[in-house]
Image (cartoon, rainbow, N blue to C red; front, side):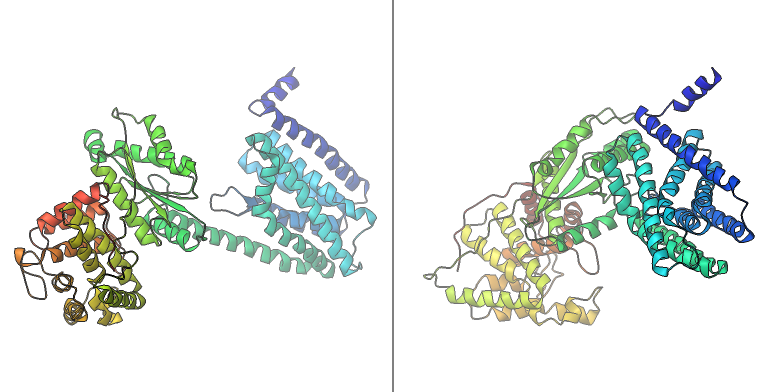
Length: 611
């Protein structure tokens, strides 16, 4: 009865298929080990040379088993160099000693971990079976010191390949039965991680065999590089782990701001012509109230749970980019991707955090590449604009960025200003050719200035002028030196003086093109409400109305766009800056209109094309 009870205790906690597989493996391995023992006992005893080999190869195999090499940062995949010495022992000392060295090394290496008798027996049996199969090529004869080098290399390669194949198949079979995964999938994953190093080590088996036959003292020449490679791999993984940790948010486990910036840049740079990317910016609604009412530990628990949901729905594609702000970058154009916010809300509906009774909701902004933007900076800004719209329109919703309709398309041969518009287009082309960023910025300012004008009730004809003023407001920078325009830091007083000349330069470049009042608006688009601006120090109502609108649009786009010397501000932060300066730098009415138009759906007022 004691034996039956022992078997029941041994089997408890193991899936039936895994238990059956393990017991079958042990049943096959035991006779192989017994046969190896019997063979060594029947022999006359090892010579001094063989005894030295037994000790050396056992110690090397044991050391390799005690220090397996991790192949990934998480440590889920390990590879042992022990098989190099086990297979080498098969070729040099004979099949029996090779099997005993391998099974004994793995047995001793497991003892400090106390893994249980079934696991110890299974792992030892795996080595016995793999070594026994690897010894089959030796049945044709011994690979002695006088054997042909080609024969030694061929037999070593064949025996090493057999050992690795048998070992991987048995170990992956156990992993598959234990986890419920497909055994084939587990084998594929294992070979993907460990295939290359195993291939290299198969050749090392041949080197070890040749070195031993030349002189046993040459064996360290083979062992030393293996252990040096072990140390190198560990050091490389430590560096990689540090890099991963530096790009990970400690609270949620998602990527942090640094990882987000890198991921979106790489995704857009590496995108193929038919690729589509969707950027979701996510903000927890009324999160400050959660912290104030329940305390920061509870707030952190809410954020951690949200991070878990994001990782569950979009593995490896979620990032925490601020206190309660998250980003998710998905690739493709399927219904499932577009439905991501809804699935995230479904998960939040069942959110359970101790002490939190009110529902946790989120506002989401969505923008697409290349439909809405062609670069990372623009894509982030437009997703942020959409997020702002969600927050201002009641929260707990998703808004997709809606681009404004273009104002200038086509051409009219009957338009009296056609010649002027041709000149304007040439000036814009020259500006974009010299300063690509300035060209992108000007287009964004033109769109925004027109939106503000619509909100303020500006008539269609004046909207055309506003759009054109936005396009041309930085035209004078065509004469600004690159060293100043692209300087990654604050300007000196002298450099600032040169930069401030661009409004007058732009005005002069438009002289004779009959573009009033656009040229005047460009001349004064850096005048401040309190009279502190340039070039003429105008104040209040003295500043042309179009100039006031362009100034606000210019400042907002500049703040929400990344520059070499600073990161972009969020829409909310940029609006906060504008509010703080309303009545001093900016016209308060224009700032208020900007907030309104950002929060509302675009008012699609039809505007006839010009020029």
